[in-house]
Amino acid sequence: MYHAMVAREVDGKITLAPEKIDAAELGTGGVLIRVQYSSVNYKDGLAITPGGGAVSSYPLVPGIDLAGEVVESDDERFRPGDPVLAHGYGIGISQHGGFAEHARVPADWVVPLRYLTPRQAVGIGTAGFTAALSVRALQAGGVEPTSGPILVTGASGGVGSISVDILVRLGYDVVASTGKPEAADLLARLGAEVVGRVPEDATELKRPLGREQWAGAIDCVGGQTLAWVLSTVQHGGVVAASGLTGGPGLPTTVLPFILRGVTLVGIDSVQVDIATRRRLWHDLETDLGPEYLDDLVREVAVRDVQGTIGTVLRGEATGRTVVRVADGF
Ligand SMILES: NC(=O)c1ccc[n+]([C@@H]2O[C@H](COP(=O)([O-])OP(=O)(O)OC[C@H]3O[C@@H](n4cnc5c(N)ncnc54)[C@H](OP(=O)(O)O)[C@@H]3O)[C@@H](O)[C@H]2O)c1
Image 1: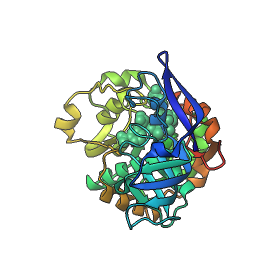
Image 2: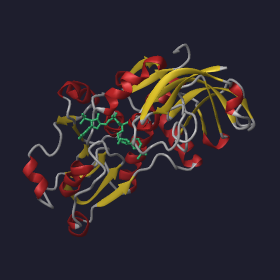
Image 3: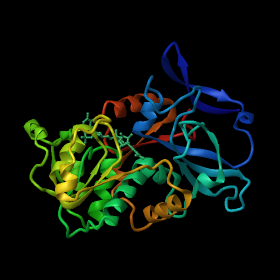
Image 4: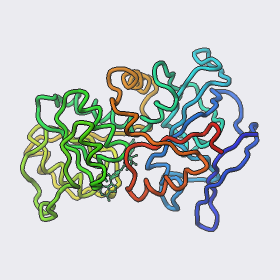
């Protein structure tokens, strides 16, 4: 038996509570991981929200990130005791995730850890991996540190704060847009110029094109925020869009695309093939890693995770929250 936080659907509501699960339920094959840490992402909030759209069937152990050590493996590349990370694909969404002492995943979903500890790896987690994908999208689109400033929206959150950190480390001038005055000091310490939520003047939302301000942007907010970002990117600029905390709509026009040649790149961290995923994690373990990870990360025990998930869903979280699973029940 092992401990897990199990989400169940009861009378149209989703409950999340500790339970003991028979280890036989995990089946056989793949890589069995003793989970030490998971983390809280916005999607973990959607996973326990009725009608959240992320999960189609319960019961489920949420936790889209997990890291720990290998217990057994049917793939010779992974040996007992190896530190590993797994995220994406169906983890914590269509199969049991990281809020449990054990997880079994296919070997082709597993990322070996060489330099980061499991805690550091989930500190970066899906949010940081998405930030790295977004940075790579700007680079692939020819946006260089000399091209001009980069706007990061939702900057105090997981994707946003790690994007700011990585971009500054790579030499970009970063403007961090946040709705949290209390996060301004942290974002300034990362090296960004800090502004409020954009646009600061709502009448600007009515204009299909605004003043060209950014060489590129990393947006995890969507909605009107993304529409405004598209309307203010310089000619030839690139916008990497990954999120919808501001809504799934996109009330824009074609003008940024046909008059300014703006590129909108969709970022999906879930289906990235494992070779690309392992390569990008290697980069995150070396030259692409956030410099101020310790400042961005706080920790909760897994038994207390629900409160933190609520904070994330309300858009009130700053940085990243790692979830201690070992000794956390
Ligand atoms: N495409 C992918 O593969 C992928 C991967 C990871 C995450 N995501 C998505 O990216 C988004 C961010 O994820 P996360 O883990 O970074 O979440 P997070 O830590 O909760 O950060 C989201 C941030 O968005 C801002 N925000 C919240 N509500 C807002 C609103 N109504 N209007 C404008 N800004 C608002 C807040 O930042 P400020 O207070 O600083 O403004 C908040 O901290 C989510 O939608 C998530 O589903 C997508």
